[in-house]
Length: 217
Image (cartoon, rainbow, N blue to C red; front, side, top):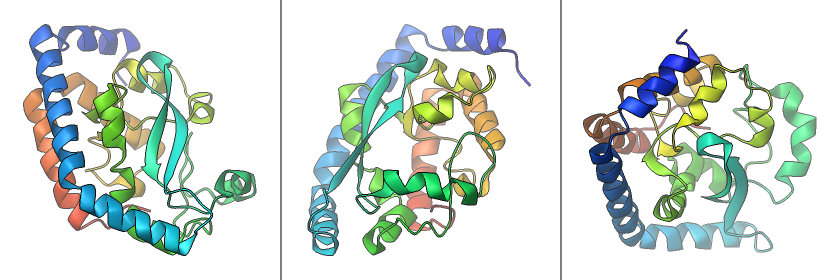
């Protein structure tokens, strides 16, 4: 286990001006051209979501916790029934992952279209808008819910020392097949070792995982 002080020192040392500027430029360009090139896919997915559930919204926004505990609204394509949050309490007993996170492989709240866009991670694409706004980065730790953060240990909270990302080392290393503690360890490994080259490597791996996703649900 790495002490919080050493992680904090690592964050300060590898967040030099050149790295921060380069990372932000890549984020802006990647998000802008991503939204532009994927606009047709966005339209098609939106149609499927509305056809399956005309009364529900296409996009789902949820308050998440970002860098240094600052909250923001994260956007996704809606993959669940409109009453998903209300039904969560009755499903918590079926949580299939240990720690401060909920995962259920056959979650009954997920729609048919939702299962497809989750399997391919297409549901995450609207987060490119969060990247443009500067609330997220293309690469970084998964942004948690406040109820998850409330259960964090001091060690876990080190995930919040950097800007959250659309993808990260956890997502390309097993995702739902990994435990919460393994996710935290991978996020802290990324924080300690992150470079522009490491970010680009994770982005390439993410594209590969999207087309052969077996661990997302």
